[in-house]
Image 1: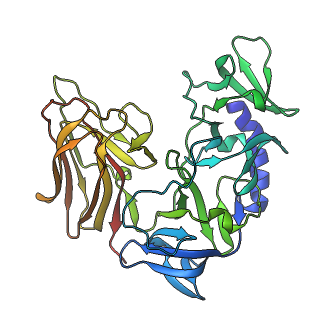
Image 2: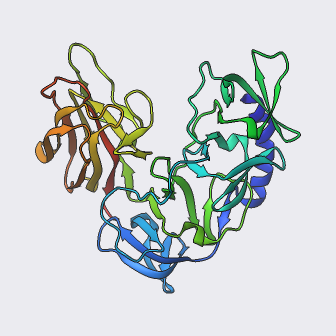
Length: 396
């Protein structure tokens, strides 16, 4: 992967220097409902963005940093839960991006300047391999020893992607003395051995398919930008109609991004499963009630985690349940306390049940504590998930 990084970084950098490294969705967004982190919903026939503000009807409605959701093409109020809608009929071909997002595609081909051209609902996008973690109709598992992996009709092959040439992907495998020149149509899945580079700062997360990671956009004065692209492609805002745009950053702080002040894990029978950030206990995706979540944490009984909030936040919101990976197993008591006062508790959190919606007032709380005790079956299946868990900072 180092070889293609060196080959393609120059291409991506030269394009990005001209176009700010983004694809543009220009124009106003129609018929939108805006849900603040605090307060009643707002609505406008059209929305734009200017100077960090959400603008509707020619005036600033709310700061983007104070916004929870933007719902497009639907004037009905957004429910105050963390559950994303899934407007897609089901999972299909898509690209996993190095910023953690998933971009649906109907076709892939080799594009100009050593890029992959993806035909997407937002138009064609030419992506350098350095922006791609993989592609396929399902997520390809990572190979061992830092190798890339391609899946063809005969099965998976591990080796090194060496770039693109004459409309084909070059792949060096220990099984062949010469690199294979693979047609993209022959590749059923791809996973490149490169790290995630999750963007920071204020952005928008678009849930296109509830079983896939959200796609990240940036709101600018000229419209929305698809941050992973290296070439501006005009696309009608109507492509986003009916979708919900979640604001990432601003006054929202993901609980999984806050290091716990204390961690006590003991398990049962001397077996301890360390808690995990933004993934399941086995390292797989964070799945709860059939929905994949990009942010959250998983904790196994018995355990106690505490966070120092230092009276900087006003609310804690999350969905709490037993991970899909073990359901219907799991049966344990769970509680959340603030400075020793019980804010929420469940005497028996059980696998297969509908996740609990947690929305707590944490004003003035110095220490937040999650406590998971052993259940009636000791610790069997007690993979407790706090999905989409976030704190709302005090307004400045």
